[in-house]
Image (cartoon, rainbow, N blue to C red; front, side, top):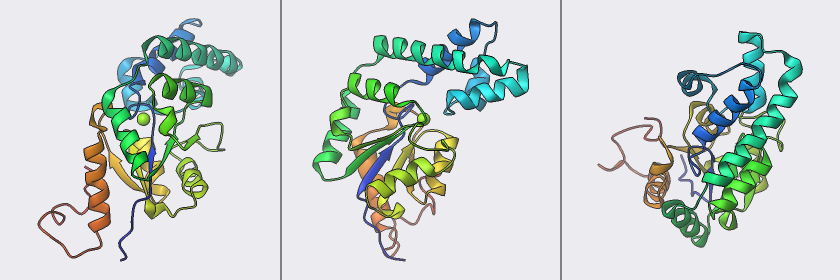
Length: 228
Ligand SMILES: [Mg+2]
């Protein structure tokens, strides 16, 4: 197997670059509350996290008799509430600014691939002072199928003119990991935004780039270090 060189880092946004999980949860519940519905926190974490709002609403209609005629309105209200909450809470964090600035200066192409709508992605990346380092944004409006489908990551790989094996995806949840793996990319799995640091990303890149080389004590311990 040839040794692949990593040339691009594709970031998920929520829970990776921006600590927005709670914002999406709160915003959707504010919109659902207008019609007496609610998602519990445990359900959110187990089932709904990382899925686009439209998918969540379809699931709610199937499981809880939420009328489908309300979807568009609830979705619009949810997006408005998300923008409002994020506008008040989103701010730069040193570790993320440093990681992206340094990767960009080292020549890596940088993409953000998120199941969110473009307006939210651009606003949050701007408020977090990250947007200037990002070469490409793929939102759920830019694909026909959101994650867990691989389309979003495949699109970024193609737009960069690279092979999937030259791309490292940074993801925090099962839907995203599934999408990245199906696209054929390498994956760095993180638990939350605090684990997204320049040194961890570089360490994973080094691991990938030495994976085809003879085994050493450093790289033979786990066959799939990303999937822990
Ligand atoms: Mg995420």
